[in-house]
Image 1 (cartoon, rainbow, N blue to C red):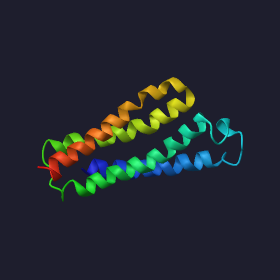
Image 2 (image 1 turned 30 degrees about the vertical axis):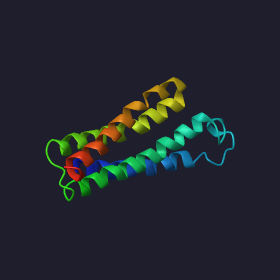
Image 3 (image 1 turned 90 degrees about the horizontal axis):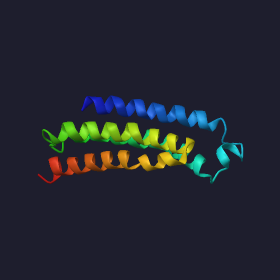
Image 4 (image 1 turned 90 degrees about the vertical axis):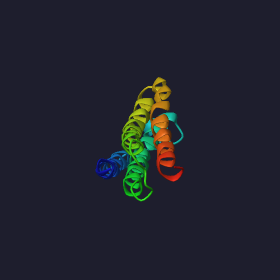
Length: 126
């Protein structure tokens, strides 16, 4: 699960960079349609999803062993955690660009949900 640990740190870095980039414009009331606009909310969600799902990948890497998550649960959960983290900010930024992309949100949600279920089934509940 080393890949999840490295990926998690890269995603935290991505969140910091994304936050710095949008931070250049936060002082402008009308930026991205104004504070409460759908577009601006999606951009903010994309930024924080980098950090949150990066941390979730690190948490998986650090806890799957002690919880005794076995084969094949650990390998599949590992891939799903990475896939969920990779697709969530992508969906957020695409939805900020074109609202129709909001229909892609089930992809990261299902990936992350399935990964958590596999962690529970493969380690805690077995």
